[in-house]
Image (tube, rainbow, N blue to C red; front, side, top):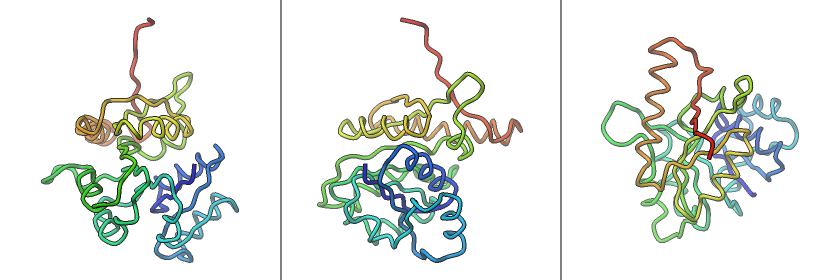
Length: 209
């Protein structure tokens, strides 16, 4: 897949490393490709990682991953939302929780795309700390990534999640996105409030059929 990751912080860098290992064609879209923070990420990922201006990253992308701080999403969408037509957008960013409005950017993504036809939207990679995306194994168990997606984007979501080493668990279409968002608050309550630490993830257990 041709993937554009917008942002090169912990989430973007971690997802990008996994997808590069899986053989995807990947570009990081950043405002300052020569910034010190970007150079550090480039050094970490090696020569296959490409860091380019955002417009260049979006050109020809099949999948666009929003790995930005939640407060930066609206600015990105205002400037580049009309360029998202024909892509599947992964919303991995969390807006401020505990305040008014949802933690996700689904409505804003749809609105900014306007008449540009999106293939679909995926809500994933937002519910646990980045360390668990980097290392999804807990002893003999593989952590689950619970996600929501439009029907047209579900197969892409399953591939992207599986290629990180996580097990994809479909919660429902985007009408159910609040359930996925609620996991972020639960994770924070356990990791911080109960002082269990950031190496904490979720696992769905099912009886054998």
